[in-house]
Image (cartoon, rainbow over the protein chains, first blue to last red):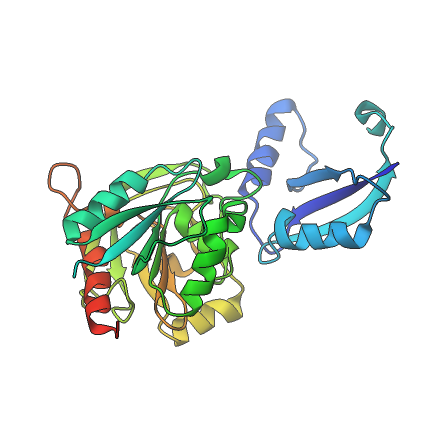
Length: 87
Length: 227
């Protein structure tokens, strides 16, 4: 059964101090060619029956994301796919 | 008759005890309300206290917004019930759309815990009517996600309608836009404030007694309001 994945990101105009802190740490790893880092959240949803993207969008809009400061996208992936294989 | 002021306890609330104490010192009867109980038990006003409701999972206040007690509070607030959200309570009010905007991670990423001077910008709300506009008060601030953000149109509307209730004076502790520390809804009965007035009500533990004014304000408001 496919799994619904919701990706939540801060809107571009909202400052992301976490991402900035990570970006500022990269030179200490010897990485000097990164212009910016932004941090979001990935949520995986398994429905009991067929995955319902409209319902997932509703969940994302009402709970998973705060539309004042965040944008979200919804897509399907194969659920049996082990997490490590996705990288 | 003594006013009854409800204080909601969510799983993870921290300052419910201090809020109830502040209510009592102000001369009202605190009534403890439970997040899972939709009944408001006849209270005349409600305080949503600080803390980390539901562990701040997902976003601060995002899950508390769906607590049974919140559904009742949202309806009652539309009918004029005075509601004060402090810190996490402010975050819950924004998530519940009783107040506009959102509270995000402090810009410098550090948790800030110190005594903070605020300027009362609006004394027209149910929770600030004993103050003078422009009056400065000293109240503890303690937050990790207190940076108030909203789109420019919302900020302009808040300013134009006199709905910025308090601003940080001197150093802005969290990067809040336009130094906003507290805002209100158009009717003035719902106020969200990031600093903690309930921690400034006794000489033994607070930096001042300035916080008491928020709680005595609602009593004054209730006396003036038709029963």
